[in-house]
Image (tube, rainbow, N blue to C red; front, side, top):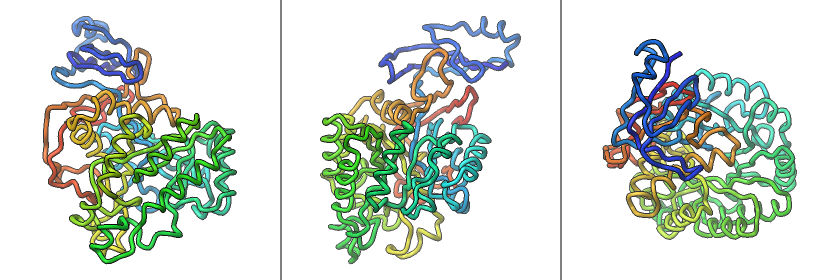
Length: 434
């Protein structure tokens, strides 16, 4: 039985708040021991030979729980020219993610047990933990609920029609009631299609620059307000995805204060960029919901600081170069994000003075794991050996040729970012090493 001994690292566990220089011994996919000092020679004797023990010197590195992303698109089945589960998992591991939750807008959609099992079985062949949501409605059409009981029993960890807003209130209410019964989260893509002319670009300075109608902030505000109202008294755990407006943040803050079980995600691009990036980068900064104004970016950061927004999720959305080369209104929305998420957090949240690295890891690991009931997001004896080693001192230029994803649709190429994942360990095995 092979073991890994991590020595001399600075260990943080946001779940308990404990941190300090510790050694960690990993065995059989679990954390066997955490101590001030673990003797490597004694471990070698125990495992009968040095080949059965790998000693990792983590001097100067941060040792943290593996990151958890509850919002990724791996495009498999149906769109594997953009990404597949194998390449998506590689990108995740390189970014420090040991657990990801796939969205269900695949083709076919994850509205049946067969498709769910296909995704989960393929995920088991990767080096990380790949989970999936089931669809709320059949075929993403918003008309008929899926067999949510069957999908839950088959391993779905939540429900969403992400990519398409749920318009019909009666469907939303029934889905919320079912999710409350199942004790599972339901996540919402909050954009009111009735007020959007051209999605992916903010209605304001950016839409005026391009001479299009764009997407007004009210599109998000309307839907968040509606779903908060529908969820009142149900006890449903609801997740407001990729929040983009200051008003949306305030609506969630007030709902949380009232005692509702409401959660929210912010993407790294929404806390890092504004609509100015869309003007500069065009389709490479087109996403749903769009990048908005500086006041919105600052409100999102404030929401992360006080945990009104309790999760950072990438909304990793790969597209081919050919698709993104289309004219603005015809190109698809979305950017990749798994490999830049942690450096963007370190650069724009930690180094900018908004929060500690411990808080950032909590938002990117501990909190999302808790919302989706995953055994992840902490470092403890007997717990899962899902661990990352981070060098928070290193700055690197993000370069196209180093991207692990199939896709390279991102406005961050050429940017200098702080922080680098040096090693990702998942289930006690090295999933990525720099």
